[in-house]
Structure formats: C-alpha cells, structure tokens
Length: 316
Image (cartoon, rainbow, N blue to C red; front, side, top):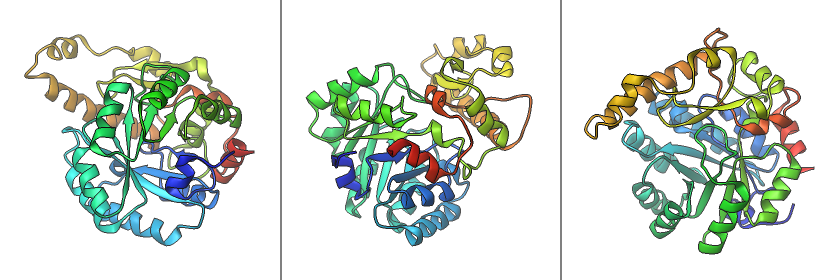
C-alpha cells in the first residue's frame, strides 16, 4: 500500500481507520490496531460517564506507538445530550482525531482545532461534503451504500470519484471493505484511505458476545438487510430469525407521528433510545431477541481472529 494523505495526516503505516462501532469498539481493539500500524476509533457513546471517557483517553495516550493513531467518534446532533460534555473532555485530554456523525460539525471543528485535534466528518453526498469542507474539516468520511450501520445511498466508486473531483480535502471511503483487494479497489477509485468496521466485530478483543462474533462468521453479504426499527434511521443488520419476525419497517404509529413536523424530532429521539438499548442487550447477552448490526463486508469474515491478524489480512 502506498503512502496517502491519510497516512500523512495521522502518521500511520497503513491508510486504514478501524471504524468506530457502537458497543463493539474498545481500548483493547484500538491498542492492537495502533500496534499494527493503523488508526483506531471508538464512539464516545460507548462510555456511560465522562470519567470513563476520560480514563479511556488516558489509557490510549499511554499506549500510543509510532505508526499508530487513535480518535473518537461524536454524534453531534440534538439527540445526543452528552455531546457537549464529551467534546469538552476530548479537547481537555487530547486525541489525534475526532470523527463527527449525524449533524453539523461546526462547533466540534472550532473547539478541536483550537487544541490541535483533526476532525473528519461523515458525509453521504457532495452537498454535505462541501459544507463540512467549508467549515474546515480535515477530511471527509465518504459513507457509501456498502457501509454497515447507518449507510449512504451512493456506490463506493461513484461517491469517491464525485468527492475527489469536487473537494480539496482528503476523502476516506467507508463501506464495502472486507479484504485487501477491497482496499486496493477503493484506493484505485481515488480514496486517500478507508474506514473499516464490520470485519473487526469478529475480533478477539471486541466487547460483544461470541454469538454476535460467530454470526459475522456464519452469515454473509446476502444476509444483510436494512431496518428502521433501531434508531428511526435506516440501519443495516444481520437478517436473523428475530429480525425476520419483527420486520424491518417502523410501526404504523411511528409512521404517522413522523409526518408531524412538531413531533418528528421527539419520535426519533425516543426510537433512538429504545433501539440503542435493544442493540446493547443483543451485543452483551445471548438472547432470542437478536438485532446485530453489521455490513455486507462480513462476507470475508471466516473466523474469529485477533485484531492484529485482521489487520494483516487487510494489508498483506
């Protein structure tokens, strides 16, 4: 793999970010990612308290090695009431980068840049990518239609090429990467690096049940479906018998309430809260009510492996 704008930005060996995954990512995964020459990222929402977040930052700063890098993901919309406190802690303690999702990154960019933290912003189209570039983002995370979780609607090739033709900041492709050939393909499309999530769910270090990890081994790309039943926003999950039973569409009452401009925001916040609690139960405890978030790149996951072995498969 050649040197890219991402490797230069983060001073990493390979142009790969271990994507932040709700409930899955943790410091053990990120430390192994850094040792393997890539960047690791954790959702700030994985920590219930600001003290827990602060301790994680201190742990990762002590563990940082040459060729590796670490950052945190912030949900920057109004549904995340912890956002301002999380941003304050990140800026106080320091990290290499922040990835913003689901909202305007303006305040994050302003505060993070003041203390030397780089900010990468999730985008799904050129319109929003131009906005974050104008706000001073250091890179755009191009979330395509092969991503796990909350994905975009544009193919990797089309999204990368459109953003590269119209942006001056680096473009990091997110979605559709499960092996080295996939990374080579994204780089050939013009991406400056990739964000890889689903392959790391089945890592030894991942903080989820063995049932969740094994599901990523047993199921494949054809078993990934979109559901509106988690956060109110379409999200990719493994099509388990339970998902088939409950369906993937929002309830009729949610559909009606979502058409009311005054109530829509509150309905989404309630659905987000309920969905996240259900996802947490599935990730942490074996249950018949199984909703496992993943992307189609689990097609290439054939065994539960240490993080360093997954990185080796992606880079050699």
